[in-house]
Length: 289
Image (cartoon, rainbow, N blue to C red):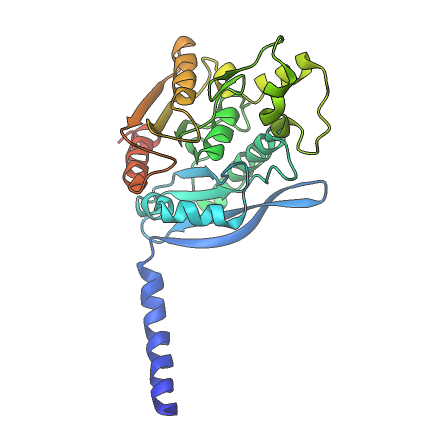
């Protein structure tokens, strides 16, 4: 029995390196990229085990504006890291914090800190700081969009590829908000601005805050090229959220392509195929392939 157990352990020891070598990436967990109020902000870094292409993707790891480690696992299950690292990209999985502690505006600020960190450490990871892609899905897609349309020189990226992002909190799920809206219309969105429940009663101030976190209301001609993929059967984030962002980008002269996934929910079982589409699009935008 002992001999059999020994042989099994030896087999595992021999096989383990081979299995690890088969992975298209090497993952480094919980790299600190910033700090806020004494709390560290962390990212996971996925480096290609094959030939690197010298390009990087900043992946905004957030779902429902939560960024616990399960969100990294969801992106892994969508084969994001396999696909991108398999092409030679280095992926920086930025976790911007969760709505239990931070507002959406603060999370966007954290993403910008992550982008700045990647640029500062570009030489260490052998990537071009002037050819960064930005990715995300759902809440991560929202934060990626918000960051991209409000970036400065330190946080500017060259292309944005995202899935089903909320983009306009003054017109979400068929509920439009303006100065004359009754208080109950603000119930759902107040928590996005004031997670601690200290929202002001001033309607104008609430509307100003919602505009400031709505990418579709902030688009400018300086925005980088966008690729958005959204399902037409999404039960959580309506397709019109992506349509509104595309319209805003089109109207100000920025580039935006919207791909509608027929029957796509939030997400869909074969979403890795669309991850591949975004990866190929990044090839064209960042490497000119």
